Image 1 (cartoon, helix red, strand yellow):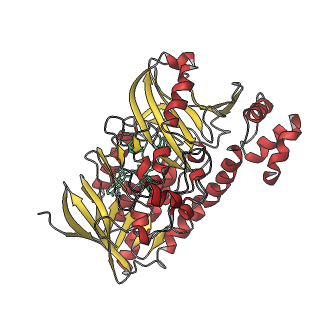
Image 2 (tube, chains in turn blue, yellow):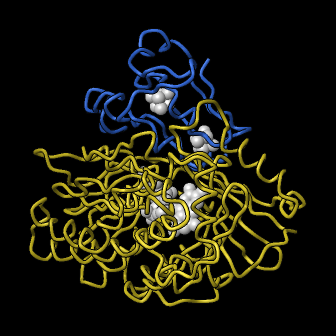
Image 3 (cartoon, rainbow over the protein chains, first blue to last red):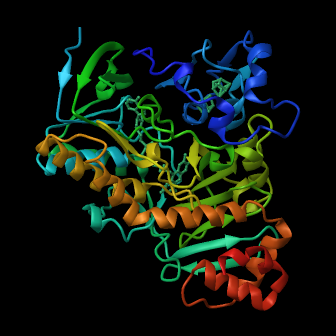
Length: 98
Length: 397
Ligand SMILES: Cc1cc2nc3c(=O)[nH]c(=O)nc-3n(C[C@H](O)[C@H](O)[C@H](O)COP(=O)(O)OP(=O)(O)OC[C@H]3O[C@@H](n4cnc5c(N)ncnc54)[C@H](O)[C@@H]3O)c2cc1C
Ligand code: SF4
Ligand code: SF4
């Protein structure tokens, strides 16, 4: 357990179990565990130009690895599986994984 | 260097649930510290600002023109082909009441807490929990960016929808995709809306959710949307749905947006567990939002009061344990758990309805004067006109 940022990934249920259902649907949405090896090298970022600091991404992340300071979103990229749940939850489309 | 602190009861988050818990803990004799990561309580607003009013007295909130914009008479529900079901306040069981100025409301609750003796620290974020012998005994925090610790036998997690605290404490608060909504709202001026009603538009305009218009008076209104996360497949979909809806509505397409509000809303069944040793969760952090209406202010405040009182008692008795906190767990459940669960079941069903079915349901109810608005009475009225529709709802009859 990292005290500064709370539990690390090993303390938490796997995102599939956590979100309670498979992420079926369009091709762009993958099951979190499948995203693990293939996408972890990708960069995840919230655009300051689009973000309205609403905190939706923080609440939906099954791995609890998004942080909102008043006007800054950061991701713990070591924990993030690039499952894209936050990307879908962002009401204004501010989060990009590429 | 920021000094490390100790207190009896620590409240993380100064939203309505946090301020309520803090105030009642202090009134019950505890030393209380409430921390809030923002620089200003209540701002930015993340709310449609509609709330019922029958519960205010129970928790000791005095209605004031400092935070009430308008008092509405009822709600109108619009089906996809815009058939209208009008629900006046008596029938609505007080589901509607005031449209408020949420930032002023939140500040008033924090003022009430302060007046009851609660210490408040702004620009102070919890960043993790302190665990000793498996028990949580406080938090790691940052104040103006500087790390320090706060130790307390009781910590109350009131950190809202974005809550990280519950998960740090090991409580299972993660949500299924179908149990959350992504929301966006514009505060618009120059709109011609009826200040007597809160309006709701159902159907494919907002998959798994609805579009709302809550009037704030003088041509001002909150026009917002919630979309079920399991029905979102691309990016920025809530914004696209809302913009499309507004473009199709002459009264609103002339409106000028002066504020953009976003956020997540849980539409989940009640959590199985909201307490553990040294910890209680309250409000959105405990997923207490009504899954049918998306309203969370009332439940957060009602549970907040119970939570604060139990926290003070635990400090007095030196029993900040999971077992002792059952008093809170049982208390809030007795008050509204069943309604949460029933409304979650109803939401599960509503999310699956087609536009044609919504039209039939609302059509069947148009003009019918229901004695009391309940799921049972609605279904009975629908059954008389469209028996085939109610077959899907047999479990509710
Ligand atoms: C778009 C939208 C519309 C809504 N419309 C309505 C409505 O019309 N009626 C209604 O009843 N409900 C509505 N809701 C729900 C309602 O806003 C919430 O239920 C309510 O705010 C819950 O109060 P709370 O005190 O639990 O959490 P919040 O009001 O979210 O307060 C949590 C506080 O904790 C702080 N915090 C978070 N993390 C930390 C940390 N680590 N350290 C310190 N502080 C922290 C936050 O900054 C925040 O101030 C809406 C929600 C949204 C998103
Ligand atoms: S992609 Fe988003 S939701 Fe998924 S793990 Fe990463 S930060 Fe969390
Ligand atoms: S959900 Fe989107 S807009 Fe909201 S805080 Fe996260 S990145 Fe910003």
